[in-house]
Image (cartoon, rainbow, N blue to C red; front, side, top):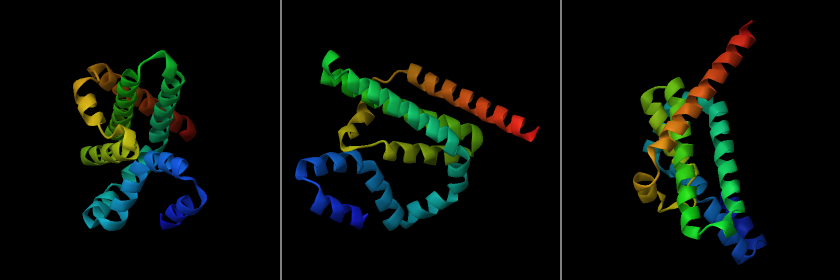
Length: 167
């Protein structure tokens, strides 16, 4: 991480550096927890097998989240920034629920909760720091239901693929 910081300091102008720092905020926080927080390290290692099992589903959740963000970015001129921010927060909330729901079907409940925490941390940039309030008040149950439905579908497809490979 120090190498990246040094590169940003020496090779990237201040405006671009600020943008990059905002975007990688969650990843930096995860790195800090992994490197300096021994309790977090132990918990991370306790759930590592769940990470491995959920990886394909997590990728699908991530790709869906990125797709929603790209769609929202293309609508910048068509809607107010406040509405767009709410949509971003709800998309992040759906992403967290997608990861959690996928893990819940594959791993132990405490592992699923931990993976949700990691997904939330990784999807947090400095622009999303106020999303918790919005997620709790404005992101509807429909998002929870959608994420749950996606997780069931992903789990079904994974099971089907495993069955086909066993033949």
